[in-house]
Amino acid sequence: MKLGVLGSTGSVGSQTLEVYERVGGDVELVGILARRASEKLLSQAIRYKPRFVVSYEEPTKEWLSRLPSGTKFLKGDEGLDAIISESDRLMNAVSGVHGIKPAYEILRKGKVLLASNKESILCLGDFIREHRGRVLPVDSEHNALFQLLGSVSREEVKNVFITASGGPFRDKKIEELKDVSVEDALKHPRWNMGAKITVDSATLMNKGFEVLEASYLFDLPLDMIKVVIHPQSVVHAILELRDNSFLMHASPTDMRIPIMHALFYPKRMDYPFGRVSPLELSGLVFERVDTKKFRALELARWAGYMGGPYVPVLVGADEEAVELFLKGKIPFLRIVELIERALEEVELQEPKTIEEIVEAVEWGRRKVREIYEREYAGKV
Ligand code: MG
Image (cartoon, rainbow, N blue to C red; front, side, top):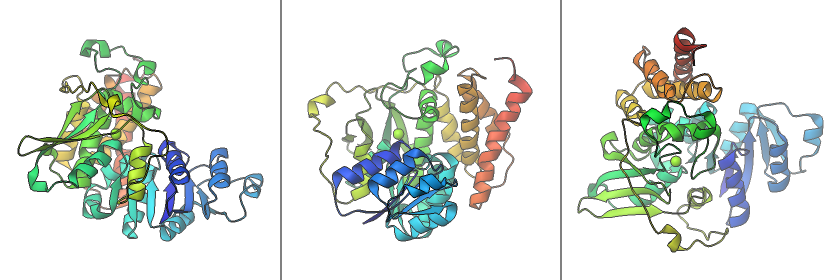
């Protein structure tokens, strides 16, 4: 199998390379891609010796001179095309809206998409649905659902649950959320992730996104997809079957497990990073979500029902609002408030091209910025 890793220097990208190196199997590394020609990208090229290393930034002469002899540097979209054309499977771990185009090109060229980038799944909804036979989800909840849904027939399934850790504010009252700090929001109890997604986990917008993603990835009606709080983050998804049996998927909170699954599917490989005892799964707790406290969840669902430009606008509005929060410009609860306001003002046509999708995302960003400047700037 020929593998391309897009977004190789990020968390999922680096762990994909680690799995590639440690698990073995019959995998050839075609190329790695990152936005910046960083020291990390160079060290990955030296260590894993792909055929192509691609960045969107011009590297220095010194950087280029240190590449291994069998590795060729290509810049930007030319490099993206080369990696996609030469690979069978591509990990799309590019971060943010930059991941939309790669996902589209991978599927358009008939290749298998290992889908980690959320924005592409959210913004290419129908396109993802049409090509879902070639999409292997990497996010832990969707990877779990993929495995569960593959083991039963659709008529047997009554509801689908994805789990949420509940984030750092699971036990706080709404009133207490008024003055939580950036540091509080960045303390995720389970996963160690980037700042944006950690804040999205604190508002539960991340889970709202995942409900929409599940709908596109598995062609399920939104009403069928529920969320349950599960603080241990060991069970990732649950199927409720017609006869009231529940099928659950459990694995330790280690992204290398879903990465391994997607990389080698349908083969299941040995986990090379140590054994986990089933005793570590004891004491599982499930709780109802407080949707009054975590309004992001219903807001995302609403955007999904509306369809058209609403989901790309939601993605952009969330990016901007989270950024304002991280910069200390707005309090925590205003993140969702600003997103809601932006969604209420949507007056766009349904986007039909990648460019129009990205434009709708940008529109969401601008709208939040505009509302903030108009009404809140300077008065946190
Ligand atoms: Mg997840």
